[in-house]
Length: 86
Image (cartoon, one colour):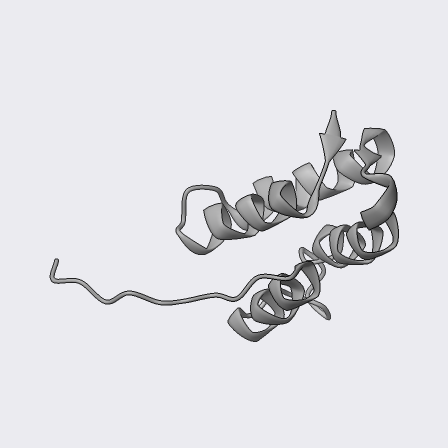
């Protein structure tokens, strides 16, 4: 499976929307590092971002909102929050 910046941004977005858990995100990242094919022109950035996500389950690293913003920025995306009535 070819992994692109869009693929990673979509995974981070799913995590921020609570569609996947941190454990699921970390599992995906670990699997992507082992088995994924990175788009050639994006390999360096993708490797760095996915590797960071892969250690997010370690207490010393974690994954904060600010971390997600920074990782998305490295991918060329920004995060936006919409507040809606429940």
